[in-house]
Image (tube, rainbow, N blue to C red; front, side):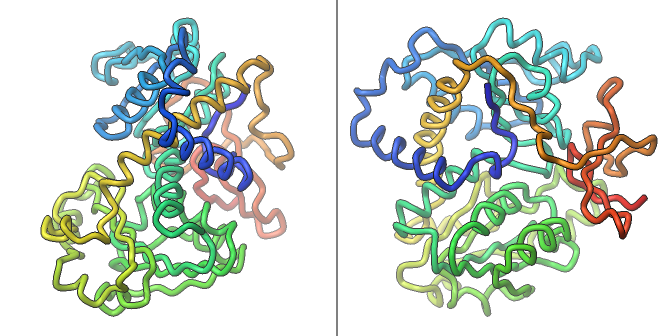
Length: 363
């Protein structure tokens, strides 16, 4: 049995296989209309969501399955203090697969270690959002036909933007991809992504605060929302929320075959006048997300026929510490009796990384 916690849980070959399945679903929907007959997905969302939740539910219905929508944290047993581990053990008794979203970073990892059915990480705080990455990749493939030799700009909230972190990680596997990081200084890409992904894999990249200067060179422009829910300081959010706005005028400088993407929801970082531009692909991403999630559900349910749980730490140098993670959003700060586990990054320099949220720590 296997879960999807991080986009790196999938190989390039597996992603290509799912893209092929998703493409076939679009071409032959009737052939898949009963593939999940008798199966149930539980959508366990402890954080507000429209697109992602409905995408999973629509995907399961179109595969002939059923949906068990779980109330949000305030209306579920989580409000009584029930742990994530206990919650997913209970829901495993009712569902064949669980799509889970939580504001706690690392929650999906804990769920996968505890559940008796596959867990799909539908977003854990500012950490990972692998199924959005699959939707992004499928969109890029459908628009460009390749993942190689592209210049991809990421604009806006690169610090807390889990979709940005996951897509950069996915694109690092392909050939001659250049990344342009466009953000205010306060929302720059975290070092664990810059050092652990971009520089480690040798991707070409540049950082800038100037969107208009970057636009002409981009094949893909990935806009992001400045996320109010990730800020502890409301004043800082108010100061940064309108840092970048993509307008029809700015799009005049973009390539004729450029592709503008956004994980949605948008606030005002893309003018509605851009919607009519044929290069605007963010609503296509929504539809593409449904098809690629259908392919993912099929894959994980097929692999769940082998009941043995995947060892998520296999081959990893891990140690348990008496000191906890310093990330206030980490699941290890709230989950009951959760071991404080860290991966070795550089033992000689005393650098380690939290198993759950990937926050670096020195010992």
